[in-house]
Image (cartoon, rainbow, N blue to C red):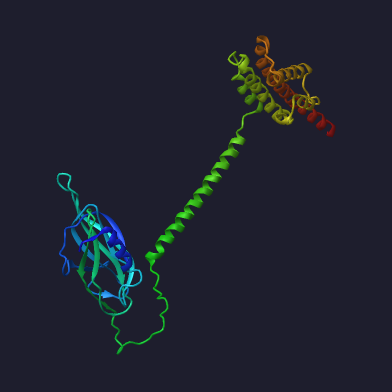
Length: 350
């Protein structure tokens, strides 16, 4: 057939065909009779076609020239009685062969629609007619002989068929190997709990033992003050840490020795709390001067002199050692007076 592209496109609209361009070309086919046989293949191949199975129905062309266009029949309004079209025309390229000396490439293509049927029976499918438009604008019709579709259903034996009630869920006996993972998990969980209890008790018992073995307050204070000896902290940028370390050591000592909550108090509050304690006036004044100088350094950006820095640690050490020594002297005096009091009381009783 030798339609021009313009006249054939009008004919295609009137006959209800769809135009689908492809970048391929085709060999010339005879004008009379069928140009080939259509194929019919299942999407899921098996021995027979059952109800609702889907199949591809289409054609194959070899050696299609690049630049060829095709027009396909429009099956959107029906295919044949008892057969439904699931998806429209689709072209697949099977093979591509490049042409020689700038000749157009040649392709092997397959075109098909997806069909199905929901009724049992034998269906004679219609032939497939497509229109090919060559790159030169020459159009001709290609026809492919039809296939036969046989749709079957699963046979039902009506002689022995009986309707039964729905069966309940089958209960199988529980075996030991099924319970074993749960038992192992329970044992492992129990061991983890026991281990956690043991470690917790050990931790707290260790802390209580450490508290019982805690060193005396004056030893702790002197050990911390000893780390601040020397002039490594006397530089202006380090004096804040230097005086904070000294006063913190003294605050802890005052808390333990006199029961004054010095860690949360200001300098004035601390020494107001120490007024009624049995502290020598010179030690009291020396410690207060040290705390006030530390406040100036920490909060007023005061830079202490070398002489003041050199006397800071000795003053703190002197306060700790002398107040502790006074405590020892008081305890010793009490121990010496107690036997005399006991002897006088015994003499009175006689």
